[in-house]
Image 1 (cartoon, rainbow, N blue to C red):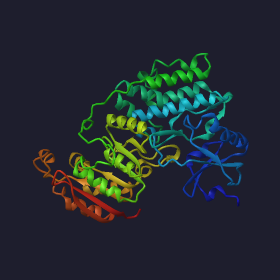
Image 2 (cartoon, rainbow, N blue to C red):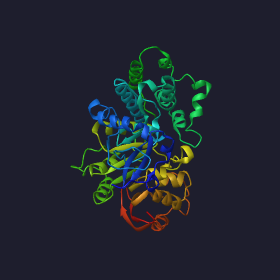
Image 3 (cartoon, one colour):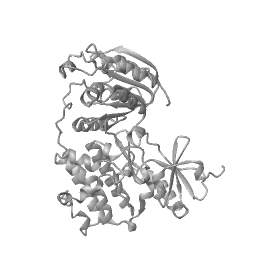
Image 4 (cartoon, rainbow, N blue to C red):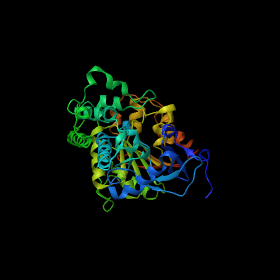
Length: 439
């Protein structure tokens, strides 16, 4: 096979700071070119991983290849994770799972004289509800571990926001988790009130016990944290539970309509905005799709994450605020914003447009534009007119532009075909928009 040049491939910008190698994409696959000093070490790790239980502990499946890249000794291939998501988008329970993934993998590696030199969450991606540690370059001999640095990194990026969730301080936790170009809210951890949070494991990194015991105690602490329910406007919304595709007759008309549209939808990925209990996302998963289930209700997301993890359903609940999505971040803004990273073949937006338009005075044109930005092929969106039995009580006068024909016109600029279907309760409708322009 002819040698590749790295400039012929799509290289992950963030990997340019990794001395072990470079991550690149080719033909929809993910590879890592390993620098000469590390070639033999990485090949040995790849060979040992299946038998040593490291994959079960959370390490992303990886194998050697016969590819050759100029200037590099070895090329390995990683299992491709469908979406890059960030800690600020994970549910509280998802954040806990990512922390446990790092701790469990660290413990497994330490038993074999190895370690993870890093403890930050940007090395973790979610494959459905399953966290995977993706940075093989972080695996080094245990003698290279700086345990104080490792603990402080784990505390800063994972343990402190988890502790805040456990104390009912979800807004402060979300602020700490928020991504931005200056370092993801990290300066908050240096505020006097937060410097010693959480107090219970604060001395773990300083004790003389073997580090394996320290990691085990940290895992016990993280597992035992209780994340309380967070009261929200929609956490008690009476959305039917998903009980499989066998009996759809018990569901509402609009739920059956979503099922019918998704059943004939060729898209492989689904973004459900305003997912609530996850009914529509789970319908999509049952039909063979990979789904992202987005909301801003902490309790809904935590319940959905735990349910998806238990059922091994291919859905990832995410904290995604459609009005204030996470933007570009990382070194030189190498990590794209949510509007790009979370794009799916099909986007589903039920019962949200009237809240955005009427409560936040966002134009239907802008709503259509931003839904289109997240959609590769098809959009399924509900429109609730001013005459709706619930919406009619909101205001004595609605803006003149809040009309179905205005929304249809805005969507028609961005999709080749827009079909209006009756929903319930009338006069609500569902618009199925096909053929996203410019996708």
